[in-house]
Image (cartoon, rainbow, N blue to C red; front, side):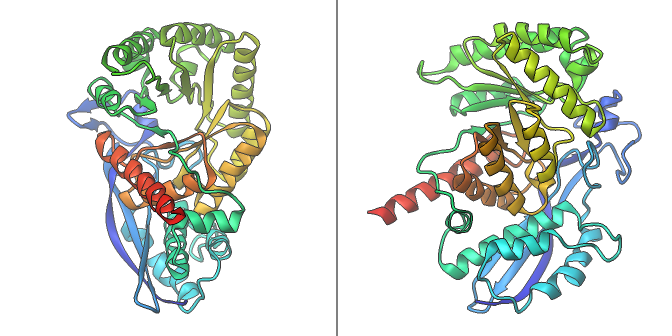
Length: 416
């Protein structure tokens, strides 16, 4: 089965691009947006509309496959590629990627994905933007699956020697700033991991001594215990603090460990994960700091898991963080890895090293990228995967949960 055409269209994402540096620099709120000037290059405002590019592949038998090029909410931060604007990058697909794909046989996803993922942009001399690699490989996976009359997860399992899961992968929901009402939604729908909480400012959300987050964790635990309909519902609490704990405690690991002990007590009996406890603005230093924090928490038997995020972007980053035990769990931030072939490899590497694999992503993706990521998760079986896109809880959870259930139902029916 051959590719006969590649067609691009401009798309909207499920959220926005936000200038993380400006927000950390105490940008003020004005309704849903921020006031002040952006800091990160490429931003026209601190918050601006999220954009994507939908890549549609036409097969010679008339079938249509597609994937979406998307980038993370906090583009340009933590070593990531610049903000992704559709009008800037559609020409790259049409002029540099499409000629390499039209006429190609759809025999192997892995082979085509590796080729696209290593392309160098003729205009910049660098690898093409991660968002382009992300979307084109989604479309290629779908195309190969259609050519072989299989589900996408089955193609992955066959080519990478894995088994498609026969049960749900735990889904992690994120609340955005509406961390109270959205937490109620998560509990009512029995999300397995919650709530993200968007703790991205010391003064307004963490507290100068961490007191605001302690109050929130206590409230959240009590809210779960109050609203749950069964004692069997024991969700994992997973909170992303965007480096604010490091800022509040001035990078002092011992003080951070003492604070984690308080967080553990506040969350009990529920399990707690803290993502991005510090951001030291440099890759090697970030690994060192997370390794030290993780080791000290283990030494003192404090049962709070550290989740790495910033500076752990590429497949090579994930390998290095895993080798150094720089965190109990690593977020595999799907758009940051470029080709979804790297997501597959990253999950498998974390599992090999005994490190938790969080197949994440961003609220700033699309329904299509989320669906494809479900197939990746079902074929590789990470510890958890993110409900996406958006920050409204219901939409992202619905998209991911429903795709997961379709996979399980179809495979069960086939076995009969």
